[in-house]
Length: 80
Image (cartoon, rainbow, N blue to C red; front, side):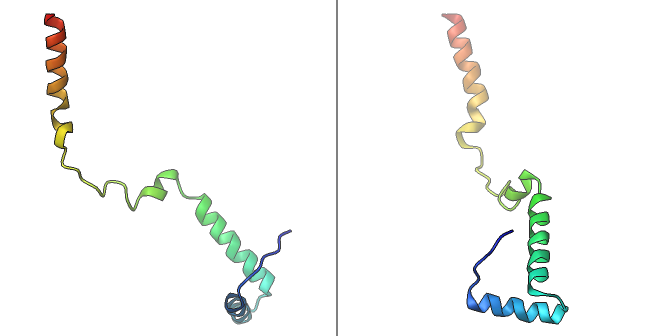
């Protein structure tokens, strides 16, 4: 069992919404909490980053030449 504190305006909104649905305030809150919990738990970890994953494109910069730079270092070390 839990108890929660609600701001007056939210409490009033919940009371009005529960009345429209023909439910008790407790049932309305339980259903809302159950829906929110299910929505949160059904997401995969990658869903939390979907809005930002792949958004930034750096253009490569130095990373483009790492392969050739690595080959050069290996060749230099091998010739020593």
